[in-house]
Image (cartoon, rainbow, N blue to C red; front, side, top):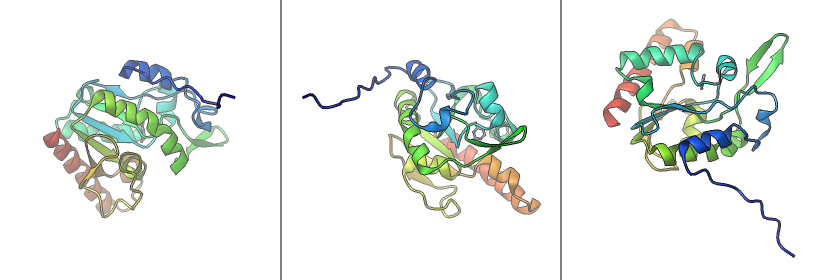
Length: 204
Ligand code: URA
C-alpha cells in the first residue's frame, strides 16, 4: 500500500511563487483575510525588507506597507535615499490577522506556527531574489529570518546569520515606533530605524 504522500509543487520563479501564494491554505489566516499580500519591488534587489504581516489597509489594497506603518517606513527610506522600487518589500506572514470589533478590524500579532507555515513563501522569495542583506523589521520578521525569538532590544542594529542564504540586519518595526508613548523615546527609535536603513543600504 502506497504511503500517503502529498505532492508539493515548488514554484520555479518569483512570479510563479506569488501566484501560488495567492491560493495558499497552509494556515487558517486565509479564511478571514481579503487576499494574500505578496512582496513587491525589484525581483533582483540587493536589499530585502521584511515586516510582520499586512495591516488593514494592506489587506484591502493587496500591497505591503501602504498604511500608517508603511508611511513611516517609506518616509525613512526616502531619508536614507532608498528607492522602494529598488528593494524587495515583503512580510513574514502574508495574510492579515485580526479580531473583528464592530466595524473595525484590530491587528493581532501572528504566532510562531503562523510564521513557520509562511516561512515557505519567505524562503522562496529569498531564493529567487537572492538579496545581499535582509532587514528584519520587528520580532516576528527577526524570528522568521533567523529562528531566534529572543527580544529585540539587545539585537537591534546588529547583523545576524539568516536561516536562508544571506545576512539579516535587525531593526524596530515602524508600527512599534508609532505606538511609543514617550516622544523622546519615539524620536530615538525613529533615528535608529533610519540608521539601520542607511546601514542596510551600505551593506547591500
Ligand atoms: N506592517 C507590516 O509589518 N507590514 C505591512 O505590510 C504593513 C504594516
